[in-house]
Length: 226
Image 1 (tube, rainbow, N blue to C red):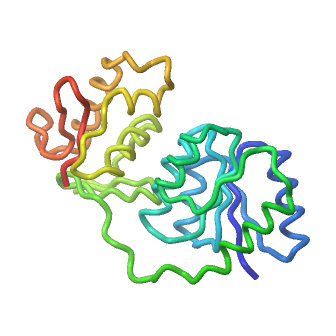
Image 2 (cartoon, rainbow, N blue to C red; image 1 turned 90 degrees about the vertical axis):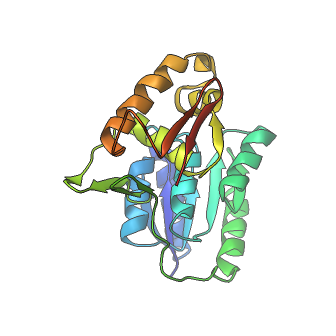
Image 3 (cartoon, rainbow, N blue to C red; image 1 turned 60 degrees about the horizontal axis):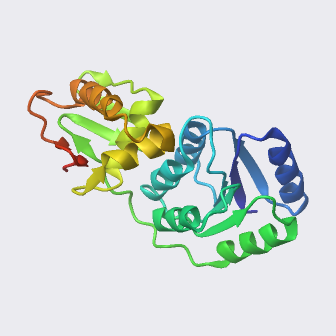
């Protein structure tokens, strides 16, 4: 029996999907947010994930990257975002398929059967997660552990950090971070980023005044240097 993790904050859709999948003898687990989804997937790996992009805590793109950092589990995006750019971004981030809401249940079931038929993508031991100074980051479990134990990050700090860690060694434009974390209307609010990056450095860098991992590229953006 294949186990499916459904990630969506719409109770009615969750109920409909659970009923239809259970009737076809799938085992179903649900999560209403990105953090809960990553935690559930880290505890028990599902056979496939049905993922909405518009979640209340984490952006769905960050959930895709978090899942991809630990496994090759098939991911089908179920989203109200119909722009081609959104579809391309989701597929580039690691999704296997993309369905725009509203969708036909039979089409979803056919696509689910298709991704479940694919051979698993080589399971070996999970690669070690990113390290920032003396801190180990586990994106799937959304935890940071340092010499003194766990370090708490706010949801906004997690979203910023996830974006940077998804592009190691590469510049992430400040406008892109602002757009994905706060929305298109906030692309000019560079002061938001300066405040949050200063907080992340205080929590994670050995010397926040001379960061080695969370780097500012003046006038351009930010970069995670492994």
